[in-house]
Image (cartoon, rainbow, N blue to C red):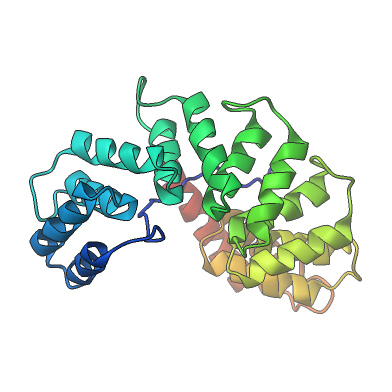
Length: 273
């Protein structure tokens, strides 16, 4: 299992529009995309004064990053909280992420799970994925593989690559569902095709071992190499091993084995640094 564990990492959040926004928000977004941040700030402020949630969030983004006005993370957070109090989905997710990061009292996983649950219930796929991670780890919520799978599946059905991979892991490792290699294969294929390197490495393992599918080392190598080129250290080592052993259908190539092994070692060192 250690070769296919999904690292819990949270992607940087930039809230998008989605609230019922007026012309102030539209004008602000045009200015923002043109990198005219002071003009964007003016329009977002006008929208925020009219209680438009999307304008409040984006004005908060400008304050948090110091774009178009003086940097003020406290004001940025306050504006995001106002939008969250309006039940605006991206703001709820952003507040959840805020409470997952930093040091106490900012870091409060229970508060984070509350905000994330609200956003996830409203269909926010990243919130659904993160909530699945929390349930799987038992962080801020009671540990439950069943609840983790429920949220992972919701995000996976919205083509979230990491959630698709998590569904593959659930069926492969029997986490909240019965072990089913064919279903694991199906989810890994979705995630791997969607560019998830962990899923690609898992596909290499499945085809190498013939789990739920006929063993095929050449297909295994294809998936290992896809993951290896994306910087997956375990996959890099797996490629090296296949070339070193010269598995069925794969000619032995010590030069390639040495090179991929060296790359794997360097990747591990970078991660440890």
